[in-house]
Amino acid sequence: MSGPPQRYERSDQLHRRASRHAPGGVHSNVRLAGQRIFFESADGPWLHSVDGDDYVDYLLGQGPNFLGHAPEPVVRAVHEASRKGVIFGGQHELEIEASELVCSTLRWPDMVRFCVSGTEAVQAAFRLARAVTGRTKIVRFEGHYHGWLDNVLTAPGDDGWGVASAGQLPSHLDDFVVLPWNDADRVAAALADDGERIAAVVMEPVMINAGVIEPLPGYLERVRELCTSHGVVLIFDEVLSGFRLGLDGAAGHYGVTPDLATYAKALAAGWPVAALAGRAELMERFGTGEVNHSGTFNGSVVATAAVKASLELLRADPPYAAIEEHGTALMAGIRELGQTYGVPLRAAGLPAAFHVSFGDADVVDYRTLQQLDLARYEDLAEALVDNGVWVAPRGVWYVSAAHGAVELDAALTRFGKALTEWT
Ligand code: PMP
Image (cartoon, rainbow, N blue to C red):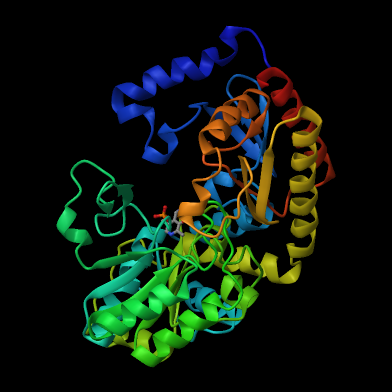
């Protein structure tokens, strides 16, 4: 797939044009990283660029295309529903059906509130937790991503975890206690010290954003117990893990139930929908009007049609066994390529989302993740893209229900070619 230097000519032209009216030529800073290739279309697990190249897609739009691109039944449902109107500014039956489906699919929550992005769902969870407990502080963890707003965006610095962006108000981080993850003693100590002021503990129950690191055995259970005994709200940020690890997400997969959880991405097959779900005794506080949660686009006809169609598809034909098979084979194939090419390639995590890097370490949290050669993978990621494998420099690969034997073969062949050119 590598070609002459003019290979990205059309993309380059479009990038120059895009940059005139969109800063950096992109509409999300996440996309500043890596290649700025322009796409024309996508179907199933494939992306097609304006330069005439096809890419086997293991980024899945940062996760949402869990059913592959543009799954026909969801496209049809959204299309048909939107003919009757997109937003009513009043209630409609699809909202009820989508809410019922979310709660019955996840099994543990009683109620749900839809919104547009994962970032918003997290903020709604914080507000509700603070309202319910009358406390202000929130415990969070190194390397976990909870959106781009001032109170959640953080990066490690010389004085610990601080702001990650120019213009971000440092004071918005004041109420957050940042701990290493997967160390329940640290949570116990924080709650023992300051439990009276801690409203919530929030975490990705499997830290997908940084290294796809699973919780150590017993960790989630112990944090659950600690939260219960200190009257602290446990929030699982399942924006990535929800509906991906199984129909009932990480909560079901690990058998630990939070008080509140956020969902997005796989919830609606690519349509911009997120949700906050939780137990009735907490969620009802929105319904009384005591706690505000609003949004013009929340629960629109198109959003709820997408949720309904996506969850119906997932329930009718759960793709989890096939995804497990594909992800397991792909990880094994990548490791094997490492051996063939004499490079220490590491593929670890879950079959539905795994992390590729260089090195070998006992990785349990953000700090131990840094023992791997992450920069070297960033470099390889460019060669992968040049060879038709669409992945991000951060090293997280997502597997969809649409990936099959053809894609497995294409991905590994192309990965091998990338290594040949790159090593
Ligand atoms: N939480 C987690 C765990 C996420 O992975 C993300 C996005 N990657 C967010 C929150 C924010 O979601 P959004 O980009 O939809 O605002």
